[in-house]
Length: 538
Image 1 (cartoon, rainbow, N blue to C red):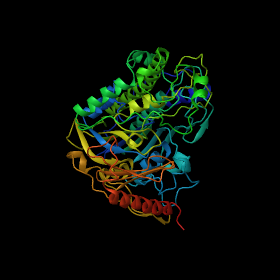
Image 2: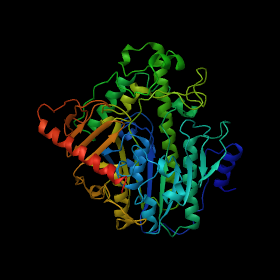
Image 3: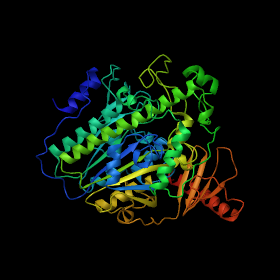
Image 4: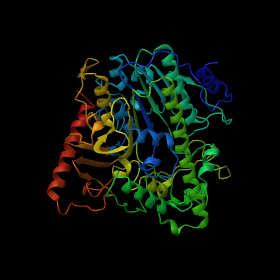
């Protein structure tokens, strides 16, 4: 029985699913000369959460992509899931298309990457999270030919909102046969297999959008066991280990650890007393020094990080199977692969979904744990703050680029500054697609992003005037190595940093360069007005 029908039976009947991947017939013609495109997006992954960025988490497949390709040190997202996904798919800042905050409709001129690629003969496939609120119908509005969509972020083992090619499926039964990360990879492999069987003469685009390691901390226990003792030394020790790697590897040669901000956490987190009442005495609401924790807290916090690591480990295993499928198709060499995260690691501590059973095995379907600010600070090493902030910890992501037939550089790092808005123009560049402003009887503004192609061969800067950030009352602007940032929702005072020697944003230079700070703040205000006007054309 074809794999797609096996998985469909899992969705409809709750039948046991096979964790392994089916073997496919690779006798079809080779991939076309135009490069295939694979974009792999993690969810709430910290900057240093991969082995090849300094962590002790086992990510051999992503490490291999980095060893054979490139690692970027200065790549950015938008600090939150839906605006990043919108920016990645369209090549525009989310404010330009009404996605931060989200509007009911995208501007009529908005195109997504598959719309462009279709003009060059590509077929497009999506598996995983979507979360572009103005375009929930992936296939119809996003231009994808096939799609497997998980819209339930609160249940890795039994999601209730799952759709195959936009046809809603019954809720998945919690019988131990389903795990979201596995299913996302299964469908990615199935779509590639189907492409090889029916459309081998055409290039393809695969958007593999994982929900890992987004909360809740749900993982397969066999993966958790691998890390039971790994993090017992605590988040402060692991911050130091990751920092040392980032410096020694040359990714951030002059890195220093950011301050540990004990009180910094999302305003929507549960209050400390309610959090501890719901989870238990091992929970820790703040990023305090590890040495101040009780033995019970240390044991529980180390276990939480083990689950977080297990989620990333399993994602890497699944990515490995997708890569194997590309090898069997003889397509890996001419496939341009990007891997990045939609925002930094999360300091959120909330309880949703099926709530939390304190007696459940941590990481199981009945538990609802979040990483929390202590480990989030470590995951975002060496940067300040977390998901939803536009300090470096919220907006910095690892970026791995792999394309053996596209560039010769291997195992190198890049200091070129980039952003998820650059993915669309980069893909158009390598696919030979000429951008045009006319679409859907409307005229689009120029793409906000720039092609990263010049940085593939050599580490050269990508010329741009600025990078703009705005989310949930947090604002920032980067020009060259200078960055202004508003520290919190209500602050009227902006901070100024020179990121060339202060990526950890520890030394506010506003008193020494007040004119520069004011000029950049005014530019941010101007851009903010212009972008939001583009999202609402008259």
